[in-house]
Length: 230
Image 1 (cartoon, one colour):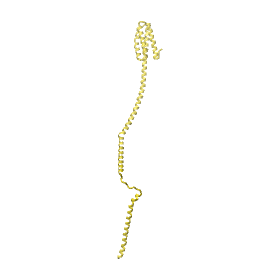
Image 2: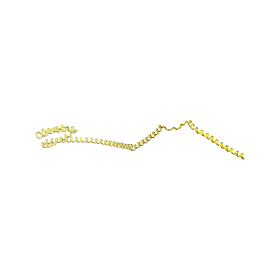
Image 3: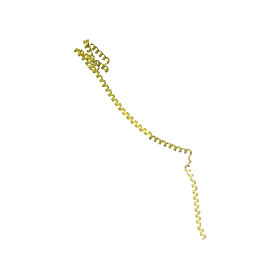
């Protein structure tokens, strides 16, 4: 019985020794392999991580500051654009529109002024024509008075002739102010009229002769200055 039990225990001891041998082999195999892994990584060319240097830390810190400054500057530029630049651009656009409208109004005003200048020039022409017509009328009135005085002298009505010639001097003064007939010629008419009035009560023949000269002079002046007459 004792031999039999010893034989039965022998395999159990052997199995235990075998398992311990296997564990030691596994440990021995795992140990060298784990120690060899770093060598394999180095053999593959992968560098080991290095600790950051002082320059690198400064560069990263400077980069963060520069980024922050750029962001702040961008925000400030955007705020300035919204608060000041954009309203100024709107104001400039409005001013340009107002300037364009002012130019249009100026052009319209200049056009109206040009039209008014044309009207004013036409008015001046009409005024000149009116002065010329008045001068012509005054000259004809003097001629009518002289002719009437000639008729009165022919009828031996000296008083009527004298009364008619009394208003001629005022009409000659009107010719002076109108400046259509030269002043020296008007002065010649005035001198001839004075001579007629002086001769009226003393020499009827001389009066008729001077009245005829005065009448012919008036007819010639009408023809020269107004384009009419015989």
